[in-house]
Image (cartoon, rainbow, N blue to C red; front, side):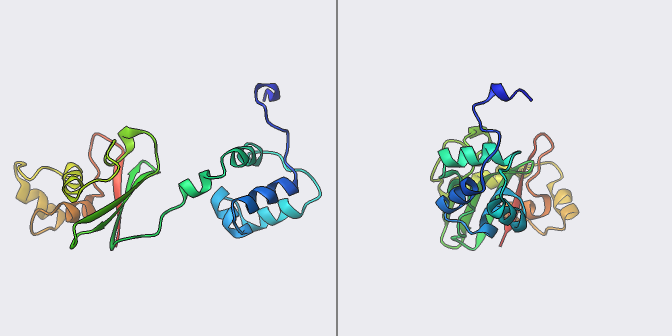
Length: 182
Protein backbone atom coordinates (compact mmCIF):
# COMPACT_ATOMS: atom_id res chain seq x y z
CA UNK A 1 0.00 0.00 0.00
CA UNK A 2 1.27 3.45 -0.89
CA UNK A 3 1.04 5.30 2.45
CA UNK A 4 1.96 8.58 0.75
CA UNK A 5 -1.31 8.51 -1.23
CA UNK A 6 -3.42 9.40 1.84
CA UNK A 7 -3.08 11.95 4.59
CA UNK A 8 -3.70 9.48 7.43
CA UNK A 9 -1.59 8.46 10.39
CA UNK A 10 -0.13 4.95 10.42
CA UNK A 11 -1.96 4.17 13.66
CA UNK A 12 -4.21 5.63 16.35
CA UNK A 13 -3.55 5.66 20.07
CA UNK A 14 -5.78 4.08 22.72
CA UNK A 15 -6.52 7.61 23.94
CA UNK A 16 -7.70 8.71 20.48
CA UNK A 17 -10.06 5.74 20.21
CA UNK A 18 -11.50 6.38 23.65
CA UNK A 19 -11.86 10.13 22.95
CA UNK A 20 -13.83 9.49 19.75
CA UNK A 21 -16.04 6.93 21.50
CA UNK A 22 -16.79 9.41 24.28
CA UNK A 23 -17.40 12.22 21.76
CA UNK A 24 -20.04 9.97 20.16
CA UNK A 25 -21.49 9.33 23.66
CA UNK A 26 -21.27 5.56 23.19
CA UNK A 27 -20.41 2.83 25.65
CA UNK A 28 -17.70 0.37 24.68
CA UNK A 29 -20.44 -2.12 23.74
CA UNK A 30 -22.30 0.51 21.72
CA UNK A 31 -19.14 1.58 19.91
CA UNK A 32 -18.31 -2.07 19.22
CA UNK A 33 -21.77 -2.59 17.69
CA UNK A 34 -21.40 0.53 15.55
CA UNK A 35 -17.99 -0.42 14.10
CA UNK A 36 -18.75 -4.17 13.86
CA UNK A 37 -16.17 -5.52 16.29
CA UNK A 38 -16.48 -7.21 19.67
CA UNK A 39 -16.63 -5.30 22.95
CA UNK A 40 -13.41 -7.11 23.95
CA UNK A 41 -11.67 -5.62 20.91
CA UNK A 42 -12.68 -2.09 21.93
CA UNK A 43 -11.58 -2.78 25.53
CA UNK A 44 -8.21 -4.08 24.29
CA UNK A 45 -7.70 -1.06 22.03
CA UNK A 46 -8.56 1.43 24.77
CA UNK A 47 -6.51 -0.17 27.54
CA UNK A 48 -3.55 -1.24 25.43
CA UNK A 49 -0.12 0.33 25.59
CA UNK A 50 0.44 0.21 21.81
CA UNK A 51 -1.11 2.22 19.01
CA UNK A 52 -3.59 0.40 16.78
CA UNK A 53 -3.30 0.14 13.00
CA UNK A 54 -5.59 -1.20 10.31
CA UNK A 55 -9.12 -0.21 9.23
CA UNK A 56 -9.76 1.56 12.53
CA UNK A 57 -7.32 4.34 11.52
CA UNK A 58 -9.38 5.93 8.70
CA UNK A 59 -12.58 5.24 10.65
CA UNK A 60 -11.34 7.16 13.70
CA UNK A 61 -10.17 9.98 11.41
CA UNK A 62 -13.56 10.10 9.68
CA UNK A 63 -15.51 10.01 12.96
CA UNK A 64 -13.33 12.80 14.34
CA UNK A 65 -14.20 14.92 11.31
CA UNK A 66 -17.87 13.83 11.02
CA UNK A 67 -19.12 12.80 14.48
CA UNK A 68 -22.76 13.09 13.37
CA UNK A 69 -22.26 10.11 11.03
CA UNK A 70 -23.07 7.67 13.84
CA UNK A 71 -26.40 9.40 14.56
CA UNK A 72 -27.20 9.60 10.86
CA UNK A 73 -26.83 5.82 10.56
CA UNK A 74 -28.77 4.99 13.75
CA UNK A 75 -32.08 3.19 13.24
CA UNK A 76 -34.81 5.55 14.47
CA UNK A 77 -37.32 4.58 17.12
CA UNK A 78 -40.32 2.88 15.51
CA UNK A 79 -43.15 5.45 15.42
CA UNK A 80 -46.05 3.39 14.09
CA UNK A 81 -47.22 -0.22 14.15
CA UNK A 82 -45.84 -1.16 10.70
CA UNK A 83 -42.24 -0.70 9.55
CA UNK A 84 -40.94 -1.36 6.05
CA UNK A 85 -37.22 -1.63 5.33
CA UNK A 86 -36.62 -0.73 1.67
CA UNK A 87 -33.39 -2.45 0.69
CA UNK A 88 -31.01 -2.51 -2.26
CA UNK A 89 -29.25 -5.86 -1.98
CA UNK A 90 -28.04 -5.72 1.65
CA UNK A 91 -28.05 -1.90 1.96
CA UNK A 92 -30.81 -0.17 3.93
CA UNK A 93 -32.01 2.67 1.72
CA UNK A 94 -35.24 3.84 3.37
CA UNK A 95 -37.18 2.97 6.51
CA UNK A 96 -40.92 3.66 6.32
CA UNK A 97 -43.12 3.68 9.43
CA UNK A 98 -46.85 3.43 8.71
CA UNK A 99 -50.03 3.67 10.74
CA UNK A 100 -52.53 2.36 8.20
CA UNK A 101 -55.64 2.99 10.31
CA UNK A 102 -54.73 6.70 10.69
CA UNK A 103 -53.21 6.88 7.16
CA UNK A 104 -49.91 8.27 8.50
CA UNK A 105 -46.46 7.75 7.03
CA UNK A 106 -43.01 8.66 8.41
CA UNK A 107 -39.94 8.02 6.29
CA UNK A 108 -36.17 7.98 6.95
CA UNK A 109 -33.63 7.90 4.12
CA UNK A 110 -30.21 6.33 4.63
CA UNK A 111 -28.80 7.12 1.21
CA UNK A 112 -28.26 10.26 -0.83
CA UNK A 113 -28.77 8.30 -4.06
CA UNK A 114 -32.25 9.37 -5.23
CA UNK A 115 -32.60 6.22 -7.35
CA UNK A 116 -32.27 4.08 -4.20
CA UNK A 117 -34.73 6.08 -2.10
CA UNK A 118 -38.24 4.66 -1.82
CA UNK A 119 -39.82 8.01 -2.73
CA UNK A 120 -36.99 9.63 -4.72
CA UNK A 121 -36.89 13.37 -3.97
CA UNK A 122 -40.04 13.32 -1.82
CA UNK A 123 -39.11 13.92 1.84
CA UNK A 124 -42.59 13.68 3.40
CA UNK A 125 -44.69 11.21 1.40
CA UNK A 126 -48.45 11.21 1.66
CA UNK A 127 -50.37 8.03 2.41
CA UNK A 128 -51.44 7.95 -1.25
CA UNK A 129 -47.77 8.06 -2.34
CA UNK A 130 -47.06 5.22 0.08
CA UNK A 131 -49.89 3.17 -1.47
CA UNK A 132 -48.50 3.90 -4.97
CA UNK A 133 -45.04 2.81 -3.79
CA UNK A 134 -46.45 -0.49 -2.49
CA UNK A 135 -48.25 -1.16 -5.76
CA UNK A 136 -45.05 -0.42 -7.69
CA UNK A 137 -43.40 -3.35 -5.85
CA UNK A 138 -46.20 -5.79 -6.82
CA UNK A 139 -47.52 -7.26 -10.03
CA UNK A 140 -50.29 -5.04 -11.45
CA UNK A 141 -53.88 -5.84 -10.44
CA UNK A 142 -54.84 -5.90 -14.14
CA UNK A 143 -52.32 -8.66 -14.89
CA UNK A 144 -53.48 -11.61 -16.99
CA UNK A 145 -54.18 -14.63 -14.82
CA UNK A 146 -53.92 -12.53 -11.66
CA UNK A 147 -56.15 -14.97 -9.80
CA UNK A 148 -53.72 -17.80 -10.56
CA UNK A 149 -50.83 -15.67 -9.27
CA UNK A 150 -52.74 -14.89 -6.06
CA UNK A 151 -53.63 -18.55 -5.66
CA UNK A 152 -49.94 -19.46 -6.12
CA UNK A 153 -49.09 -17.01 -3.29
CA UNK A 154 -51.88 -18.40 -1.12
CA UNK A 155 -53.75 -15.08 -1.04
CA UNK A 156 -57.54 -14.75 -1.26
CA UNK A 157 -57.51 -11.27 -2.85
CA UNK A 158 -55.19 -8.56 -4.21
CA UNK A 159 -53.61 -6.58 -1.37
CA UNK A 160 -50.18 -5.00 -1.97
CA UNK A 161 -48.95 -5.37 1.63
CA UNK A 162 -49.93 -9.07 1.69
CA UNK A 163 -48.25 -9.61 -1.67
CA UNK A 164 -45.08 -7.91 -0.41
CA UNK A 165 -45.11 -10.08 2.71
CA UNK A 166 -45.06 -13.12 0.43
CA UNK A 167 -42.65 -11.82 -2.25
CA UNK A 168 -40.58 -9.23 -0.32
CA UNK A 169 -41.56 -6.86 -3.12
CA UNK A 170 -38.88 -8.40 -5.32
CA UNK A 171 -39.10 -7.67 -9.02
CA UNK A 172 -37.29 -9.72 -11.66
CA UNK A 173 -35.48 -6.74 -13.12
CA UNK A 174 -33.89 -5.17 -10.02
CA UNK A 175 -32.15 -5.80 -6.69
CA UNK A 176 -34.57 -3.89 -4.47
CA UNK A 177 -36.68 -5.67 -1.87
CA UNK A 178 -38.73 -4.94 1.26
CA UNK A 179 -38.61 -6.42 4.75
CA UNK A 180 -41.77 -5.93 6.78
CA UNK A 181 -41.71 -5.56 10.57
CA UNK A 182 -44.96 -5.50 12.52
